[in-house]
Amino acid sequence: MFDALSTLLRGGFSHGVHPPDHKGATAALPIRRMPFPEEVVLPLSQHTGAPSRLLVSKGDRVERGDKIGEAQGYVSVPVHASASGTVADVQLWPHPNGSWSEAVRIAVDPHSAQIPRPRLVPRWDDLTPDQVRTAVQDAGVVGLGGAAFPTHVKLKAPEGTKIELLLVNGAECEPYLTSDHRVMVEHPERVHFGIRIMMQCLEVDRCVIGVEMNKPDAVERLNATIPSDLDVTVLPLRVKYPQGAEKMLIKAAMGREVPSGKLPAHAGTVVQNVGSIAAIAEIFETGYPLIERIVTVTGPGIRKPSNLVIPVGTKARDVLEFCGGLTDDAREVLFGGPMMGAPQPDLDAPVLKGTSGIVVLTDAEAKPRVTYPCISCGHCLDACPVFLNPTQLGKLAQAGRYQEMMDMHLADCMVCGSCSYVCPSNIPLSQMFALAKGAVRREQQRVREAQEAERKASEKAGAAA
Image 1 (cartoon, helix red, strand yellow):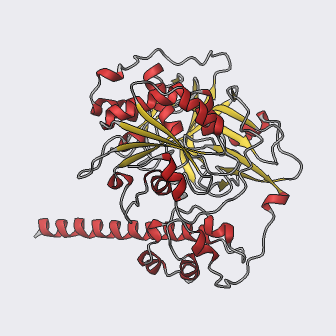
Image 2: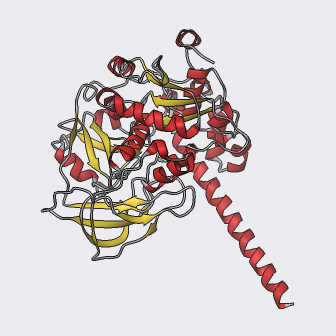
Image 3: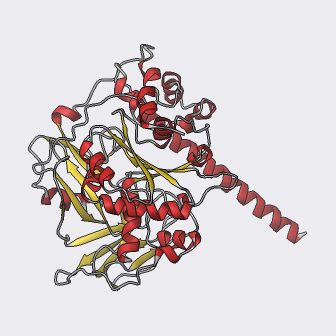
């Protein structure tokens, strides 16, 4: 299927860009634990799919690890209290995606030892694949690389597909971020334990861990700790963005293309972030749900860059204060990295399950740039890793011709930012495509609602007749 030499000779995937990685400030910093804040705020929407359904009310006492929101459907996961305390309120709160979302505010008990209730640790090797998937869903595990897709869904092959390989994403190609890097260096045994569980659940015999070559210590630690009874290969990859995107990693590691509109399973693989793999291991080591995560706090605008274990729901301002506060020239705070991250207009926005990093940029990096007309230079075509035509898509976006953008495969756009990065006219192509995708989703939802209303009206008229 592949080998390391042939992968290197192929050069990985085509196109992409090479932004400076800016990882030096935190790449060698050990993970440390942040103290509990006075309050955590837990949005019920922290994952792709249906938001969790509220289970608590104002005034309720909760313990760390208690379920405060339950899954609504298969593509959904519960939300758990990340700290012991009292529910101060349930209200709309600033969400890192820029919206206002229903959230549970918990006043943290300052005298609590913050030890979760004792839980039954499942014997994973005695469970069926369905039982493993249920345990993963009940623990609220989602993809920790940013997309926050419910992990249990990936643990079952779609109808008509056969999984040949588990592909673990340790690329961490986004500039500044090092949380996955530190997981691989400090907890390689946990990564391998999570791999063991996933391989059994998916009924696959082989696993590949893709790690970019700028993390040689991670490659060394993972190689040194591979269990003798597992067929696991650590595959060093050439450094290029966006190597961590599923389709790009599959192309780099397996030499296969994922067809347009299809899933990685259609290429015979499941791709899982290394942090999510470690989170699965923790479930079956401790019985605790996903209530905290490792976050890189870095950038030239923060005084003490760090890799921290942070309770989910901790406000950005509390994290930044713990890291020494902002520099005088700090200008922009991002959740995620500079290529795909979301600028935060409100520092009360909380860390979510999918928050891999908080990056603070200064005036020098975040200086507003003048946008000029497109000169049709073609740089964006050479950068796009999925071979779209950003020039034409950008012109259609400016004209609001979103359906025509869909006809030109807008759905395949990963909003990776490669086109915006290389554009000499400073056109915010990636942001325009994200807005277009949102407009298309809203229109599709409007059509579905109209069709449902029409169906109900028709049924009512039929019953009356």
